Amino acid sequence: MKTNQRVTELTQTSLLIAIIALLALVPFLGYIPVGPIRATTIHIPVIIGAILLGPKKGALLGFCFGLTSFLTNTFSPTPLSFVFSPFVPVPGSDSGSFLSLLIAFLPRILIGVVAGAVFGLLCRHHKSQTLGCVLAGFLGSITNTILVMGGIYFFFGPSYAAAKNMTFEALLGFIGGVIALNGVIEALVASVLGAAVARPLLKYLKK
Image 1 (spheres, rainbow, N blue to C red):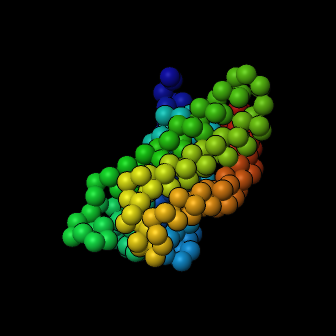
Image 2: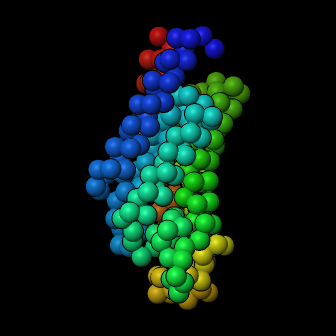
Image 3: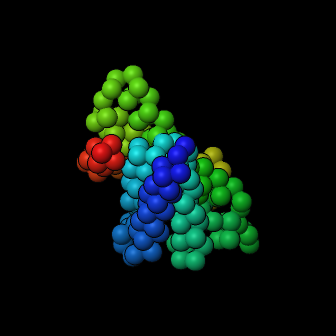
């Protein structure tokens, strides 16, 4: 890789990391309180970065997203923050669980991996950047939702259900509803914004 290209990619990556940090730090912008949980918009710059720079840089941006999630839930916890930070005690226990780090980081890293790989694959085989952007946004976002909610169910199911004041038997249906409704809506928004922002940037960067 030429030195100029390396510098350009480093600059672009740094700018996207700064955007992720800004979204995380500004109240109600990156993490939006919805009852006892937080909805997020930080997956969108991760997806855009993965489209522009590939899955490796996308994974790095996803790690930065996971880091903001870990820090936010550690220093500004909600009743459900124990699923994202080992420093927040699990209900009914005096300590947290390091399994929470898997939920905080792995799904977010895979946003970038999936989005970057999907975009690259479609551009190689279908030569359609618009379709690649749309599907990268959708699949990157839904990957995050499925893995986060799946990790919550398998690692913290009974504790999460207790924190939500529901029975464990009802939790699976609740998680399925979150994926089917919230997850799909977030994925559709990510696919639209990903295409709207990344497509013009791809044309600009070609010049």
